[in-house]
Image (cartoon, rainbow, N blue to C red; front, side, top):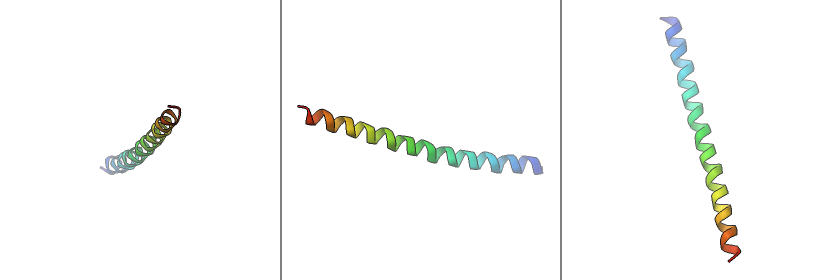
Length: 44
């Protein structure tokens, strides 16, 4: 029972950190897209 609880805690911590990582990547991709859009508008 103790191993199961420890494994559940570790899995939960990994899931939470993965969500934050994915959110950060999403922001980076969005920022890069905004930069490309701005450059395209400036070149017209």
